[in-house]
Amino acid sequence: MTDDSDRSSHRGEPSDEDTGTSAGQDRLAEHLSALARTLEMQPDLQTTLDAVVRAAVGTVPGVMEASISEIQRRRDVKTLAATGELPRAVDHAQYDLAEGPCLDSLYQQRTVRLADLNAEQRWPQFVARARQLGVGSMLAVQLFVEGENLGALNLISREVNAFDDESEHVALLFASHAAVAMSGERARDHLHSAVSTREVIGQAQGILMERFKITGEMAFHMLMLASQDSNRKLRDIAEELVSTGHLPAA
Image 1: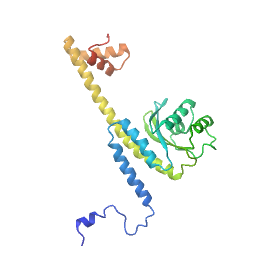
Image 2 (image 1 turned 60 degrees about the vertical axis):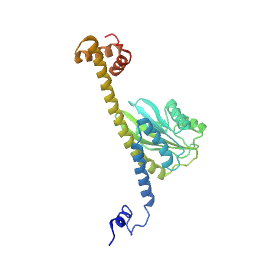
Image 3 (image 1 turned 90 degrees about the horizontal axis):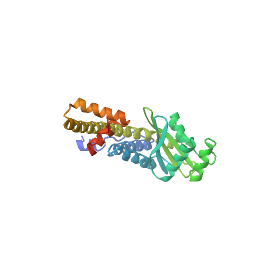
Image 4 (image 1 turned 30 degrees about the horizontal axis):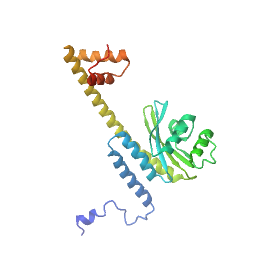
């Protein structure tokens, strides 16, 4: 008979019949689970994004540099985070030339692999620019879809044939874990922003109520008129009033 400490010491371990063929997958699962917990502990969205690109370099086989690109409202493209100047330069080459694996991954929501840029026939202008920058191979995977905003994880190596099927498999798993953490952080940011906006508008209303001896509803109406007349956001009008005491003419 074994006591509780003996039983707990083997909890989570494979059976005696396990052959060990899935050990690599088990280690990857453990690594990704630990990664997800680490990402969820980041204090804000930008820190989370920076942590994602750094973690990609240490997780996906073959990666030397990484970045995250986003299409906002399906029009404006920008780089949210990068491990260095090389991935930023590669991203901007695609934005400037309006072609490349990152853009295909974003717009078509698919995985794109460039095994050897010296032999790559797709996106000729971008490939020429990327080769000048010293890129040997690339891998781009979809990272998130949030309304009209699309995100992709861009992975780069200076070596040719740096990415294989395992790289794609790990990158896709990594992206799914990273996307969950990013979504949670975005939700917290939006909640914090909403609470902050409500507070500053309330402060602005209080100032107008005291200054003009009016009701809260009338004060809010004044803020709305100032927002419409100046073509500025209501929050910006409220922040200006709170910080300067000045309300644009309404």
